[in-house]
Structure formats: structure tokens, C-alpha cells
Image (cartoon, rainbow, N blue to C red; front, top):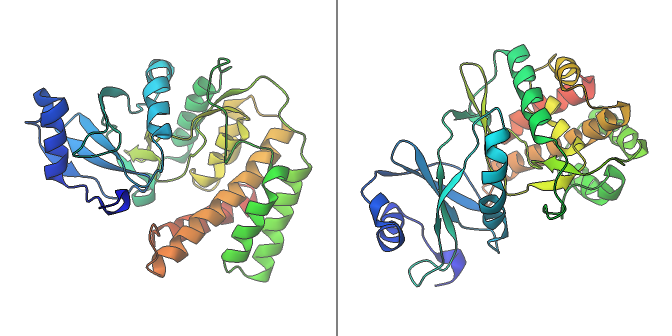
Length: 299
């Protein structure tokens, strides 16, 4: 059986706990829908088990193990914190981590009704996160670059997502403006790197937590500032940037272009879901299309 064929079940999770953390093995185990690189299982009421699944290396989990304990205490929203480490074994030859559970509903399955509160909350979270990173902080790989270095990826998304001509022209204009914007030249700051609707949770109509720090890196905060359009409802972006108060015109232009690219990614994942392709998520299509409207209108 190859790694791709390993079926992760509740029984497997319990067996691994019995082998490596027997004091936790009696807690209830429940599958959490979603996930691709990693699969999540609830463990009792306050914990979760993050199982390496499609990620080819343990790098992303090991990054979370190393840095989340450093970052979590300074962040104003709940984030998952590792509490136990699971190592590869004959039963499961990959890494797994027991983490604190962040309560709430993923935004891709929920909604934000308190836009101003969510804008303030997101701005406060990113102000706390976007501080100078240490010299040994992880470096970005497939993301983190200036938009001008991501044009091939942007073009691939444009070609893959069927858009009306006027939308294509609009999104290209936003992207070209981002490419023309000045680069980030200040010290690298901590960046979540993957703020999309499945990686934040909501409760009571507003943002209540942030999850999945596997893409954490030190670099340009514009990659996170794109969330002003990708996550927040229409009309909230301006308030977000007012409260964040650290983004100059160039950073906002870069962020808007990166938001446009992220919207295309969400729409492509939606199309893949509609076609029944592995990893596709049908409900992401409407989420990405609504976010694209906000990007194009700049609101």
C-alpha cells in the first residue's frame, strides 16, 4: 500500500494515540470535513489531530510545531497550538500532531454579518502578526514573491477559469497595477501566507479564529493584506486598511492583485469540484466569484 492509499480512519487515529500518547486515547474521535494536505480529526472537545495526508513532506507540520508556540501567545485571535507530537511508525509512516481546537465554523461554510467588527478584528490580528521575523524564520517558496514574479501562475489561472471578457479585462487591469507597484523593501515580517475562507473560522457573525499556518513565512505582508477582499464582505476593505494603518499605496496595490489571483484559485477549485476532480470543492466557486466582485470594485 502506498502513502496515497493509506486510509485514515477513526480507528487508525485511536491506535496511534494508544501507541504514542495513551493518556489521550480515551477521548472521542470525530472526523472533520475538508482538508487536503492534512486531514483533521476532533479529539474530545478541546483538541484535534492533524494527520499528514497529501503533503509530500512533513515540512509544513514541522513548521507549525516550531513556530506556533512562539506566535500564538502574541496573537489576539485563537490559533491552533501544538500540544503533542506524533512521529512516523509502522502503523502510519507520516507525521501527525495533536493541536488545540479552534472553535467556530469555517468561513467557506459560514458568513460574516458584522463587517465592521470583522474588519477591525482582522486588522488587529494582522497588526499583531506582521512584526519583524527572526533570521531563522522560514522563507517563502511557492508564494511570497512580488506579483511581477507570479505572472505565469496568474496567467495559468486566467486561462483555466472561464471568465466573461469584461471580467478578464478587469482582472488583468488589477493585476497589471499590482505588477507595476513598488516592492516591499522593509524588513521581512511574519506572514500567514494562506488566508482564504477555509483557513479562518467565524462565530456570531465575525471572525473568531485563524487556522492552518503551514505556509507561514517571513516576507511581504501584502500576501495577507489580500484578505481584505477575499475574506471581508463588500464595503469593509477601506475600514480594514484604516485600522491596519501600516499599508502604503504600493502594498495595497500588490495586495489587491494578489487577492485577484486568490479569487481565481478559489473559482478554479470550485470548477474542479463541479467536475468531480480530486481536491475540488464545489462550494468554493461562488465564494471566489463573490470575492472577485469585491476586488474588481475595490471595496
